[in-house]
Length: 384
Image 1 (cartoon, helix red, strand yellow):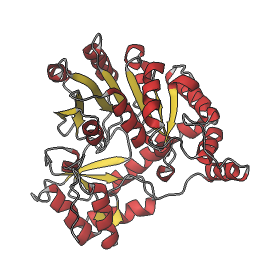
Image 2 (cartoon, rainbow, N blue to C red):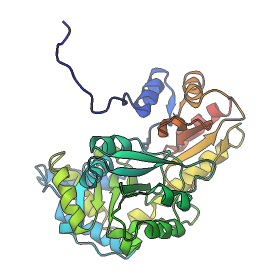
Image 3 (cartoon, rainbow, N blue to C red):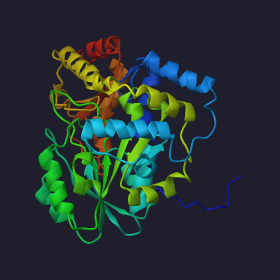
């Protein structure tokens, strides 16, 4: 029986995500899944032991909405060690159920009906829906291969009295580029003395390569005072399924952020928070992450040398872009489908990260995988 109720969608343009589509295609054809950004190797046994111990000692009920104090206190310590910034746990740090929740809360906290939000494309797919559900208008700036650099003079021309926020992401998903100190200085100059907030997606902050430094908003006092900084313990420590993220922001922004957060998830898994609090008390756990992923990037690139793909420079994250223009002129989404079905390796077409589906004949591959997984995937890709 057909319903007589009429439903008006809040997100009429949205459907199944490209990540779900490609993962389902990989499963159907028993392909190696280098599409979705999750590691296939085991979590540190010490971290698992600490979480199990937290469960055994009774840490299984609701945590405070803003997060366990012992975890926030450790994040304060880590932030000081990494960025020489002292933040107050009770008024500047909020634990969230993943970084995506934190991004949604951050956008909802500052964006209102009619506000414009500047988004750099290609971009993570949760930014635009959150802006739209807040009544805001996304304004896009297109980053172009091969270097995906920002022309800040062009950004300045896009800003007007309706611009409420700028979303930055460094290290950048999906391109693997990073912002440098000149970029942050330019951002500071552009937003200084303007009523513009910064939402800084820094979930890959601990994954940079070739001796390059992650330029966090935390380094810049005048930017910090107008920013919400999003990070992810899940991304850093290969526990994406645990969904533990956090937001650091000055107290007046944290207050608004928490108003949203309390009605979305209220609180995040207690034993995971408690286990992480103990685990990150050892700073060396952070220091080894970049080395781990740089080794995997280098291995994947070495394995792909005999292929017909052209790699783009990756300075951070655990994603590698490969240009296939010398192989095929197919639309990137068709080529990605075909190599999943015919060669058994799933990737993400980069056009999915552009609102106008710009096609530069580039695919994104996740190299956060076991060495054997990368070897098998590369052997198949080299047969194309």
